[in-house]
Image 1 (cartoon, rainbow, N blue to C red):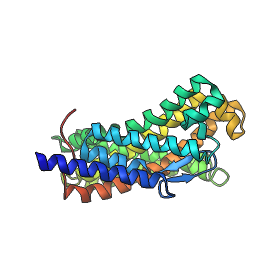
Image 2 (cartoon, one colour; image 1 turned 180 degrees about the vertical axis):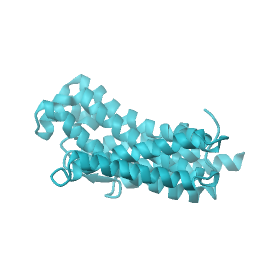
Image 3 (cartoon, one colour; image 1 turned 60 degrees about the vertical axis):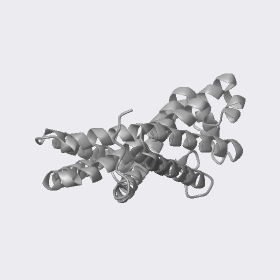
Image 4 (cartoon, rainbow, N blue to C red; image 1 turned 120 degrees about the vertical axis):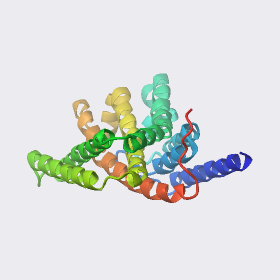
Length: 274
């Protein structure tokens, strides 16, 4: 028991150090004019899986704190104020402090919680008797790939591919993935699949909650900051979700699955309930 607690303390410190290093070097944030694309959520997701949702939430909080520090003292993007209560005060007054605290900390804390439960649910579905659970998981994977690839192509190549063509490509990719998972889906691969879903869940949690918070809490201020009309904010946000969000989710799924499988040889995924 003592060795286990020591090991978890060391692993927590390691993940914390990785988050801090990534946050204050070019490794963690990729500036994209109006918003930062980030991969710092990956150690948070891994921490949630191998240390549990409580320590995962702590790592997510650290992620949020680094975001607060970076955006307060560097302000590298036009939207920096949405992550900094200090800067938000000058934009929206007292209410801006609380809005930015929410956007900066709540989504990042959830990144340390949601992936753990996504992993547990997917793993149970895949290990269950019969084919129903596996079928649901396969359909979900195909659906996510279809809508994500369609949206990504529409944003990436709007002048090259029509919406119909993007939809067809998305559906084709989803069907191929469905066929591959159905043909090769065996229990021995359930851990890999569940880890990949956990990566997707963590990345999309960060993107959707952050961008959704910006739209709900800072629509007009965000429009002014990025130089667009108020009615165009939703389009800008959807562009971030369907481009940055898809890229971050795919990267997270691949890295979390790869690193996760390696880590399971040293320490099993945390399975105790909160």
